[in-house]
Structure formats: structure tokens, C-alpha cells
Image 1: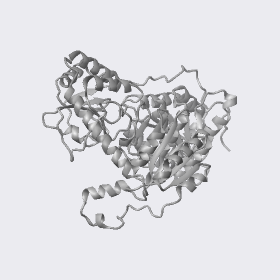
Image 2: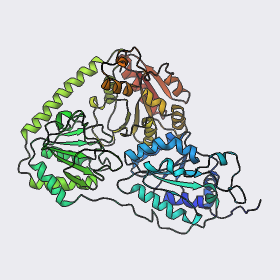
Image 3: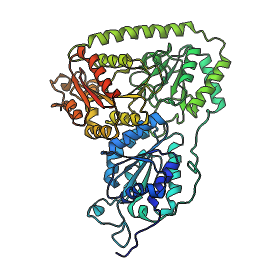
Image 4: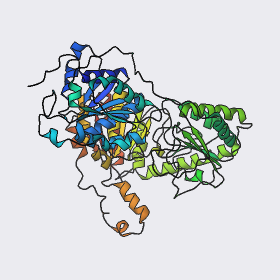
Length: 566
């Protein structure tokens, strides 16, 4: 042995302590041979006295990324994820795609296989250290993170961590990536005193340009048929603000492919989840942080309609090709811009009664309620309809419930009265998000009942064994509802849309859609200590939901596998 083992504090300890000081409370870790210095730092924390993020061992990298996503949705602070070199990073890529799509800050770290073949502490000691070498490991994820860097010297650790967290939390927020070579983590690095919190403050946006806000308010003040289409609003603030703006000025709000809840579904101006009937005759549209406010092939606004785009990045610059028109760009913080817009509109508006607009929305809501009642009533048998299952879940819930939905419930038949009661999957569509994000949300908000509502295909993509093991290990009383129709229904619907009279539509079993034979999902969950049932008959569902909730109230995870139609 031609080197001396470090005896002082290490770069690993510096990195971890700076993560905690910068606001990263939790680290979801999936370990490997690059982790010895990280593991030693945690084992030595009692003696070193260093304050490190709470670490949780997660048995699959995709689960770790989803949990970091759900943690942020509930807490508003970033989580750290640490995985094993290039192979662990490969398993994490889909979660990073989802996080980037929804502007979720994650401090993504992975080890880097040792670069040296000897004569250095931490150099290569296993055949895999040659097999895992890459010329540019960061290239795997560079397009889906805001920033990436490989730690090169131990003295960089603190400053690099500060920079990583600050960039992740700067608007528009998003994931960052830090590569950590094994030899560098193992080197000695005296830890200097540093101020509490990050030493590099993240950038935040205030309200958009006052002149642009004035133009937008003028357009709304004179509009006859305005509509707000919300996709990813600021759910940490502004819930009541948007509700007040919509109510005061009689502006309908559509939650199209809603990722984060915009306002209560009981609000008189909540205009459903389909923009087509509102877009086709609108004279002003406010796209509230909406990457896709409507589908151009289905509907286009009138040529004289004024399009107002509001959010930290109205152009959605991470999308290579996006042709939605923008007449007024309100680039800024969502809540500050909404507040300034409301103030300007309040001052300009000479009439806020708008009886025709209010009557139109009220009539729409009445028709919608009638349609919901019929859909729910028609789906109570065998198999159940997703609408019926969704209504039963809604009836069992209160404002302390958080539903995390990935191709599961039908939100249009449910009531969501308070903030943080519904989260939908990112438009990136990386499957397996729902249950993993729900685990993170449950860990972040133990006082809430989190319900993961997922399709059977999404459940399989989530690595359910790893999810249930994580719930058991961390004592998370998550309720998972698996909507089992035995098919990739999104794939089926897409094929029917393009080829409604094609051969696939006429086939008894459409190619590349069937999930048969399906495993016993309830049995798999019970193997991890869950209360689990399969429900086939709609008449049995309400009681089954109550049994599952009784189990979660007692601290046990639960799963309901409900057999539904497609």
C-alpha cells in the first residue's frame, strides 16, 4: 500500500454537510462501490458532530427519483438523490425527465467509477471499475438537467454544492447533477465554518413587466369571452388568489391535463378539464404556466383572440418545437404576476357582474354534474368504470387527503376543495411516477393521507416490489389503488385515434397492448406487510375503501386492486 488513509474530515463529509446547510433535508440513496466514503461519513456523524441530510436506503433508483419529486411537491424544498455510477444513473434518467418537465428541483448525485488503477486511496479494486468507465458520464442526462459538474478536487465540495442547490432552486426550477468520483470523496478536506443556508442565493422572479401586465389587464377588462387555462400553477401560494381573480371578474378556469391543482372544483368559475369548448370562441386566453393549453389538431382559437402566456418561462424553452401563439408574454413569478394582474384588472374594470359569463359557466357545470351522475351510475357493476371508482374514493376523502394520479382516477368526477389535494403526472409521461411520487409525498407530509391512483401498467413500471419494501421500511401508510383493466389503455386509445377503422381496432386483442396474464397485485403487496384486497364488484368497493383506510390510520400500507373497464 503506497498511500496513507486519510484520518481527518473528508470531501464526502464536506459535501453532505453542505447539502444539509443548503436546505437539502433528505437524501434518497441507492448505494454502490463508489459509496464507502459516504457510508463512513454517516457512520462517523455521531463523533464528527456534522449535521447531515437524513438518509433513506431506496432499493431502486427510479423509486428514489419519484420520491424526491413527491417530496418537493409537498415540502417545496429539494431532496437529494445519490445513485451508483453510470448504471445507477441510467435507471434514474426517466425520473429526471419527469422532474425537468415539471420544474422540480432535485439534487441528483452519482458516484464516478475510480479513475486511477492504483497508488491512490479509493482507486480501482474490482473488475467492474473498468467496466463502468465512461468518457462522459454526464452526457447521459445533460439534456434533462439545468446544470452538471464533476467534482475534481476535494476543496471544491462546499462551493459546488452551494452552486448546485442554488441553480436547482432558481426560477424556473429543475434538477441538477453532480458527479462524485470515489477518490475525490475519500480525500481529506478540512471543513471551514460557513453561514447557515446556502452561500449562493437562488434567483427568484417577481411580477412580470408592468407594461405587459397593463396590456393583459386591458385585454381582460374589455373581453367578452375570456378563459384561463391552467396546467402547472404555483401550488405553494396563489390558490386563493386565482380563485379571487376568477370569481371577481367572472373568468372561467379550465384545468387541462392539470399537473398541480389550480382552484377548488367547487368554485363557481371552475370550468372543467377540457379546453375545446372554451377555446373555440374565446377572445382572450390566459395560458397559466401551460406548456400545452390546447391541442391544435382538435381546436384553434379565433384569429383575433389575444393569447396571454403567464409563467417563469412562457416560451417553455426546453421544448424544441412549440408553435402556440403568444401576444402578451408575462414572464415572471406566477403568484406575484397574478397578484399584479388582479390589482390592475380590479382598477380597470368598470363592470364585474358579467351575468352572461356567469350563466354560461353555471350551465356548463350543471350539464357536467348531470353527465357525471350518469357515468358513475353506469359503472357500478362488473367490471367497474374508472369514474365509479373515482367517485367512491372522492366520497371517502376529506381535505387532508392528497391524491397522486397517474392514469388512475378520473378527476372530473371528484371534488378537490383545498390546495395539495391533487397532483397529476408530468407531461413527459415517464411511467411509474405515480406510486413513487406518492411515497415521497407521504414521507414529506405524514399528517396527510396520500393515495396513489395508478393504472396497472403504471404500477408495474413503478417497480412495485421496491415501492412496497420502501413503504414497509419507512413505515409509510400509503394507500395505493391499482386500476386494473389488463391493457396499456393509452396505447390503445392512441391507435384508435389514428386508425379508428383499422385492423387493430377490429382485432380481438390489439397488438402490443395486452398485459395478460396479470399477476396478483394484492398478493405482491401482502408479501410486504400491506393490507391488500382485490375488488371486482362495484357494490363491494365502498366497504373495501373503508377497510383500507382503517389499515392506513393504524400505520399500515394498503393496496386496493380494482378491476375496471377501459
